[in-house]
Image (cartoon, helix red, strand yellow):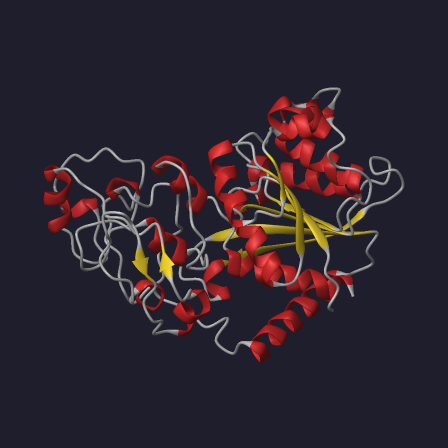
Length: 369
C-alpha cells in the first residue's frame, strides 16, 4: 500500500488530478498541457513536475515518453472531437482526425505501457453515436493486436461528485484500465467499496453530503485584489481545504446596472424566467440564484457570469468568485490560479475535482496491490 508510483497527467489543466494523486502519495513526474497560460498555474503549484507545454500530437511524435517511463497515466481527452465517421472508412475510428486527442492519448499509453491508466470524461461519452464510440474505445484498449500482445482490463463507472462529499451536481464517466489485469466487474466493485471503507475509517466525514453553505459559508466579502486571510474553518469540508495563511483569487467583480437590476429581482432557487424579459441564453439556469442548503449545479467555465447558469449567491447580488468556485470543486485553499479571467475560469471549470481524484488514486493503489 505504501508504494509511491510515478504518474503522468495528460491534458493536465490546472492540476485537479495531480492534487488528489499527490495527496495519496503518488509522484507526478510529467504533465502535458497545450495552453501555456493554464500550464503556468500547474507549474507554479507543482514546480518539481516536468511540464510539457505542447499539443499532445507533437508529444506523441517525440521521445518525451518511453517504455515504462511512468507507472500510471491519468487524463481526460476533451471529447468534442469524438466521431464514429472514421469507423466506416479504411483507417477506422483511430483514422478520423476528429478523434486525434484520444488517438494520441492511446498512443502514449501504448508506448509507455503503464501499470494502469484513468480516463475521465463527460458521461455523454457512454451514449454518443448510440454507444458506438464507447464500444470502440473499449475495443481498442482490449485489443492485443494493437498493444503488442498486451491488453487493458477495463472498468468504467459514472461518478457523481456529491457522493464524494463535493458540493456540486457534477457527473463524469471514469474509465480505469489495468495492464493485463484479471479482474471481474465484481472484483472492481468490491475493491471500490473497500476503498470507501478505508477512507471513512481515516476521515469519517469524507463522503458526507456538503451543501453550498458548508463549502463557502465562512468566506468574507470579496476584496479588490482578491487576497484574504483564510478564515477559520467552521465545517468539516472547510477544514479539509483550509490553509493557515493568505489565500488568493477572491476578488470583487463589476456588473452593469442592467445586470444588477436583474439580479435584485431573483430569489433563491429562481432564474431568468422570473424576469419577464426576452433573455437570450442557451442555459436553462441563466440568472439562477443558488440555495445555501443545496449543492450547486456543475461548476462550468462561466461560473462568474449571471447568464451562464445558476451561479448567483443566495444573499448577495453577485456570482461566485474564483476562490468560491475552487472550493466547490474541492481545490485546497492554498492552490493559487494564475492568468487572465477567461483562462482562470477555464482552469477551475474544467478541472477534475481533487477530492474525487484522491479517491481514485487510493482505489488504484488497492487494485495494484
